[in-house]
Each structure stands twice: as structure tokens, then as C-alpha cells.
Length: 224
Image 1 (cartoon, rainbow, N blue to C red):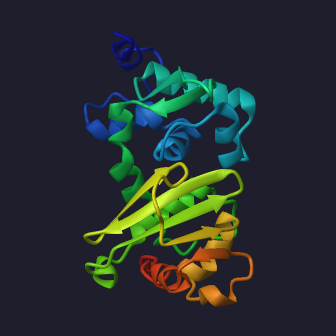
Image 2: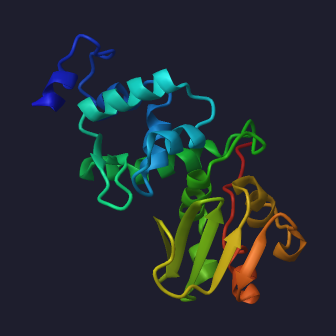
């Protein structure tokens, strides 16, 4: 089994039976965990992965994808026509990493050294909404909000105090659609800036729902 080959390879960096050590053997290489992050909302093409991680080279991206494939975390396949392109996608086991990735991100955001001015992908923004939703603010309110970042589209559905996000264009009616660069949303969603004052974000549909939606999230407090 390919997974066993990776587990028993000479590249093992830890002699430790703890699951955390084994997990680091799979995702401890630079960029590996961020690649998994970029795939959490659905399959991506090679070029889309590079766009979401502007600091990675094509060579390193190829190496990391190969390593994640060998570990059974990622697999590649070809989308059916009319797309007919090769994409990379997390395996079922790979998708199980979502709570781990989100928990690590939420924990690290408490550091005073976090710099929100660094590059920020669309996937990072949408995952942060899932991670930092304040359930008490949402209550039993329901809403469906679409996001567009150039040609990249997502749909976020709020129900029962939880946010569900998927990649792709809306297949049914949405309450509002928000368009702009991912970084344009940070001052609104996490900085308290009114959506009406955010000129870099285009709002279509029900503006009142869009404005309320952007107030449902909160960054974790910084450590002292």
C-alpha cells in the first residue's frame, strides 16, 4: 500500500508513536498544510493553487503535491467535459483535516505577531468565516450569500448557527452577492468598518442582508 511506503520510508523525521508526530511527517514540509487549506473547499487546478499561494514555486508545488498524493491525502483526476482539465482534490481522509486546519489557524490568530496585511487567498477568507462565526450573533437567522473573486465563485449558506461554504457558482437564488479582492473584506468583517463604506466591495441583491451577514464574525482575542 502506498500509504505504508510513506509511513515506513527513510525520510521519517521523528521516532515517536504519537499521532501528532505522524501527522507532522505528512504535513510538516513547508507549504504542505497550506496546499491542503487551498483544497478544503473543492478541487483546484495547478495554476489555481499557485495563484492562491503566490510565494510557492512551480517546482516546489509539484513536489508537495506528489508527497501528499503518496501519503493518500490528495488525488488528481480529470473533470468531465466541458471542463476536461486535470485537478487536484483532497481524498475523503484529506477532507477530514478541516477541523485540524481551522483549529490551528484560530489558535495562531491569537498571536500579536499576526500580520493581516500579508497576502490572503479567497479560500483563506471563506474558511475564516466558517471558523470565526459567532453563533450567538447568528442565532437562528438563515441567509445565503455568494462571493465572487474574479472568476472564482463561492456560496456561503448560514443555517442553524453554522456556516457551510462550497466552491462554485450559485445553483439557486441567493440573498446577496459580494465581489472584491479577499483583502478588501478584512476591514469590514473583522475591523468593524461598515459595508457601505467599503468602496472596493460590490454588493448585489439584498444589501440589508449583506450588511448583517458581515457583522457575524469576530477575531479571537490576542494573548497578553
